[in-house]
Amino acid sequence: MSELRLLEQSCEWTSDQLEDESIWTEQLDENECDELDAALRHALAESSDVLDIDRSHFPLPTLSGRLGQIEQELIEGRGFVRIRGIDSERYGQDEMEMLYWGIGMHLGKPWPQNKHGHVLGDVIDQGVDLDDPEIRGNQIGAAALPFHCDGSDLVGLMCLSDGVEGGLSLVANSVRIHNTLVREDPDLALELYKPQPYHFRGEQPPGGKSWYTVPVFIDHGGRLFMRAIPPYIAASQMIEDAPRLTSTAKAGLKRLVALAEDPTNHIAMQLRAGDMQFINNYHVMHGRTAYTDDPESGRIRHLKRLWLETKAFTSRPEGFSNSGPSHWVANRSVSRLRTD
Figure (cartoon, rainbow, N blue to C red):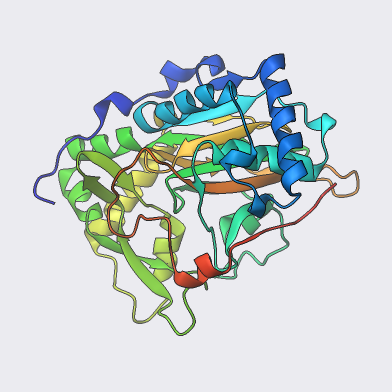
């Protein structure tokens, strides 16, 4: 980069500006829900497998315009939205997944999320060992998840079941975090513009290195692109041949996390069954509060996840394209965990 500068200041927000949930909640009306139901029936007549369905198979003659406005808000505005109004009790899990997939196809193209090629993933307690360095956040149950960014343009979550209590979704304004660092700690900001090491969590190509590098911040034509998963960066230091974090990088990451955790810079939202959340992964860090399941009663927190490529970006920095490791793309598939 040639010059450290403030980026996309119009996308900065503070939590007090968004106290009114109606600002960031898109409430679907009866006609829009009927249109979604008709699109669902149209898609299912084509195939019951979401992998066979694209935007053309999920026609939304009226709602597509509203989704276009939502996409614009994700890219040029606050960077997140909650869509509410679908009656989840009206549908089975397969139908809810198709509804979610169909809406997602109007916002972008699917992006593989892991070495299994999952383009529709599950966020649910998968009984993993928390000490396993190769587990990923979507597999972890009950525990809170720290603020982080994922690996795509847009990240979507749909709630199938919200469990017993807790599990609030947290979103923090990355643009404000970046610009605060530029204003107050430019040396730390500059260090985070340099490539930082990440643990691959066992997702690397066969025979490939178990670590990779990518900057936390990238200024790409005046747009902020961000990749930050602090636990993966810290885990890289367990790998002998991975680059060592500098003291400045450690201080920068600590400051970044503190800014995300500052109540001024984030909000918490509840996701009820049927709710969908979409975020701009480069403008919003996200996390989760701890939650409680009750398997005996069937009250288990279960979300589906989409990573999407938006058409709004005509160019991206190196390493930010919808491809990823070749084996991720080649293994295109759907995670099919069930709780119904």
